[in-house]
Image (cartoon, rainbow, N blue to C red; front, top):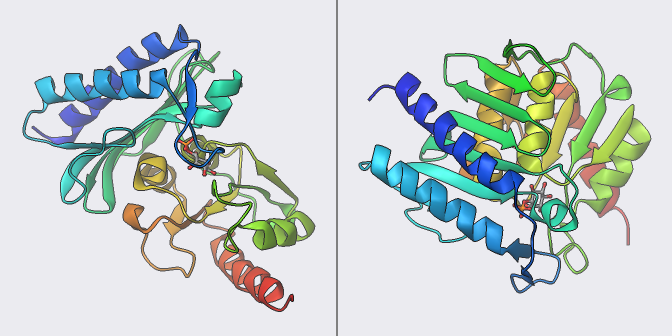
Length: 270
Ligand code: LIP
């Protein structure tokens, strides 16, 4: 089966799960150990539904999911059934289903859907990125923004669940970019933040200490929309590495240099 056919399957199974989640109201909200890291019964139900559908339609491809785990290397589907569970649990509609097909840490296909917002983004390596945004008459090809400096950029980032106790909590970079960038946001869903860069709503995104299922699909969508995605030192993006910088390309080198300055400023503190 070629990647165009696999993308169609990925879009189908995500659309089906989105219909289910649009009706969902979280009743059982539990923490996964860290009280800030939440899970609901719908995370599990959504993963089971997509896992079942993909097992039937692409039996040769294993799946690694946030909730039930699975094969963690090689070519596989990578699923976050609800990215942005904290938003979901509070009824804030900025959350998404994120599904990628990856070879190791390199994404080949990505689909991100925000059921309550009516947004779906998708890409196939070499095939461009597209989206249906609620209110649009038809699907559109995605293109990143043309903002050319960090000083004029709208940036977005996120923080790890152990931010209260960890030194690598992103607070230093956050404070630095709040001063340096045009504006800086924390929206709570990595996959949608990446799609915002691909759509040109946001100009750059960085985050550390993520999971591969948070970022694989969105990173490909940014690249296929003409943006650039690397690790925080400018090396190749690897979904398994848990850190990334994704921009419109025009501000990428400046973002990397600013991250070094932000870290130096943070380290210099007592
Ligand atoms: C979340 C991300 C968010 C990040 C959190 C977490 P989850 O995913 O999308 O942007 O800052 O640390 O990883 O856990 O809600 O699926």
